[in-house]
Length: 273
Image (cartoon, rainbow, N blue to C red; front, side):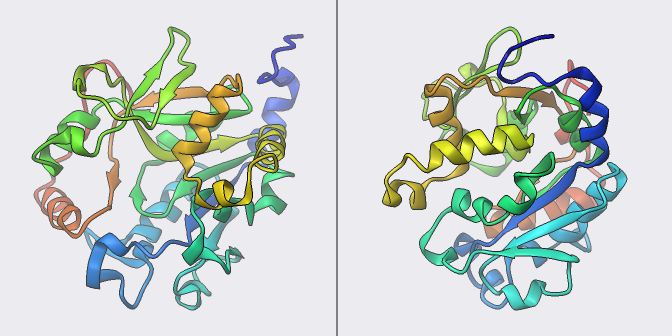
């Protein structure tokens, strides 16, 4: 049997897949959306006539993941009836996404979990590819990100982050700045997959950090730190429908694309959705 720290016995993989659960991180304020999130969390904003949360829950259902929990924070009361299970980060205003995720430890410690940002639209095939990938911690990367970013930003490098992998798809670098767009091999999408053993290792590492560092830590920051600790983080390359709603301008752009049925922007050669 492979003794690599990120491997699991083959006979257990089917069991893990059956028990996979979904966690949607919906604690943040989404302040860059301005007045659109004054009275509601970002995940309740509509794109193409459906809320972001509806898009996400439908993708999880279609992927065969039927137990999905929300991690709430800002305007938590408006999400009370949106999912049968929720976890809450009462300190959401003073902490970042990693702390929000730790509030879902009851699931992360027991079950394989697909973790999804609350401000993205993804598809069921992406979730299926992610949970089928081997490893204690795996993330997706979008291969057609550049054409999306070029439509969103006058200068894509003002927002795009470094993303490098080796020939096996193991993550080498994430979350940095670069002045050469051609060196970016994909973009992190806000989708992660943890096995319980992977989460337990990650949480043990988090406990070694000073409290102020831990409270400020975002997800790409955590991934970059785990790489420095020698972790083998797997990646799954995808293309297809992916919308990251970060600014009010994004909503206008995406609504126009959806109304026009313009799905080509999300696809490129050499990958499968």
